[in-house]
Length: 337
Image (tube, rainbow, N blue to C red; front, side):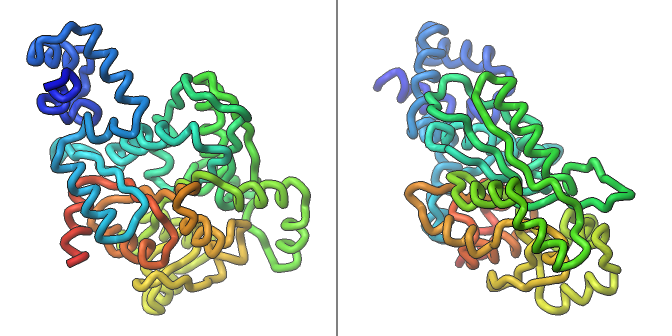
């Protein structure tokens, strides 16, 4: 048996489950009778290949990923293990996204991201690795404009997508990877006439054009189930009363992607919120998701309250890659039967 096969047999869970990597490497060396430096070398070589997830993940997780890909027709799936009940699933998903997205950077020219708590947690921890051969600066764009009114410029990244993109941009620069930041830094739009003028402004038009050409889109998937969900809070801040939000639910809306409401079957339902922001048309996202060879349209989501929304977004064709946690993966597989 080869050294790397022994590592695979003994320590599948290294990447996600063992926090003290030095201790893990020492134990691998002792178990497999391999010098510590050799273990590091094998792991480093594995990280450069697409076999990394097979080599360093538990086989049950790898099988679940394959089953989800097959059952839902996805390009790819990445599942984060939840160590115990106290583990924050969103943090685990963010950590899995950090690893997964780092694998893609050689193929990426433009990254566009949405808001949301899970995306925010990913941006908080994301550290691009330096060893990528990137010819041009990676362009970083928001998928929608900010949500604020002039007298109340909210700093919360759930509302200020520009704060998240700026942080992501700084993450690239801080880790020695060249990047360029584009923006849609306008607040809540008052009327259709103002929106028409804003869309024609060169910086806004340039950013929207770059978003349409994104090679990587990273989105949260919203839900109306949770009383404190990001989508519900955005609706409230944008002037929707509890009565109006309940009316949206009664009309069939169960969640959102970039503030576009969708129903259980994956159909989009327009609301007045769409008139208040500048964002990429979801039909363009759908088109990008279909270009499976070159485009990654990634949904980050997990939890019981997101199951229905994840299935709807997949049905609607709005993502081709899902990053979730193992408990959510199990529920999705049960629902697919």
